[in-house]
Image (cartoon, helix red, strand yellow):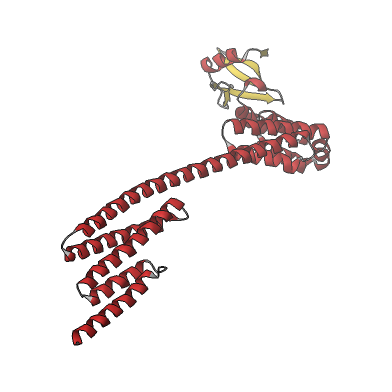
Amino acid sequence: MLKTDATLVLVMLLLCSASVLAEEVMLRDGRSGDAKILETTESLIKIELKVNDGTATFEIGADRLDPHNFYGIRSKHMEQTADNHLGLAKFCIENEMFPRAKAQIEKARKLDAEKVEKIISMPEIVEGIARRIVTFAQKQLEKSRVPDAKKWASFVIARAPETEAAVDAQAILDSIDQVKADAEAATQAEAEAEAQAETSAAAGKLDKALQVAETRADEAMREKNTSRTRKGLEEAAKMFEAIASEASSAADGDADLQDIANAAMDHAVSAYLHAGETAMGQSNYNEARRLARQAQAVGSGSSAPADFLKRVDMVEALSASSGRR
């Protein structure tokens, strides 16, 4: 029997004929070949290869084999005893194969529950296992595999809360929570910045629209033809009304937009009433009342439209009285 370097064994695996009962043997670097498994222990496997007209036997240490490959070979060929299952569980823990470690412990427990409980309840054993799991959880966190990191850190806290490793596990969870909180805060800040930018853009747009409407109202007031003046003022009033409605809908607590809405509303009321004044000057009292009611609809909090309606009634009555004389 030869105990030799794993790379040399691999060369032999690739060059020599495989037995009918051959199984895949894989090194940690991923290279593999087929060989007959003669024996396994907690730390190695013994294989047989056909060489020329005979056979040769080699041993490969478990530390040179792919962990999952060794697990498959060992679990298949070992005697099913509690000690063997615990030994394989230890190998799994050392190689961060925790679900398989748990499975091996459960198999050992079915064979010798007393021994298993005695071993896994020893403080140094518990601490060692917990430490391995926490190290694995930390690696997962560094690889941005947050769900896995959280899962295994939580496992340590639940199963081994009195260990020093549990303190580090909690630190991992705290770190995850902090990262999550920071990400949420950043997202919130970004959303608020975008909302503020949109609000500022809307305010700028509406402010320009307000200036356009003011210009239209000024132009209407300068018209020499009273009919054109009234028409122009009503157009400006409708422009102000639309601006007030849009700014009020978009404001959502924003002071600048609300200021624009209030200013546009005041301008709309004023423009409608000025148009009403023009209509009243032409003795078109019904038109004056219509425009005043438009002003009331826009500025429900203003008393000016109601006062204007009273004045229209008074002027019309005086006009009628003068006509009768």
